[in-house]
Amino acid sequence: MREYDRGYLAGYAAGVANLHGKSATEPINLGKPPTKAKKTKRKASAYSMKYAKAFKQVQGKYKLKSGKWAKDGFKRAQKAAHAKAKRMK
Image (cartoon, rainbow, N blue to C red; front, side, top):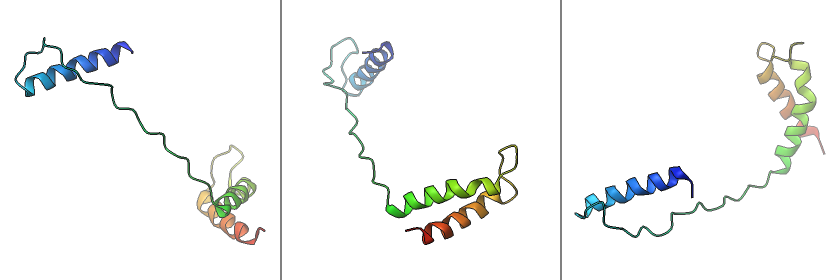
């Protein structure tokens, strides 16, 4: 347990003790801290994978030499990638 966690739990215990009318020096059993549930990663759809591939192919046409997007470049690249993704098998 990190130093921060110990300090946080001590402050939390003192706050809970004040709510219940006990002194902060009396030990309070807080149990284990809650654990985060693992999030399941969503599966990418077939279309989103086609779109990603199409966007990578198209984006160079809508960028400047410096690598920055041209004026309205991202919007135009996005539209072109959607059109190209529709035609992909």
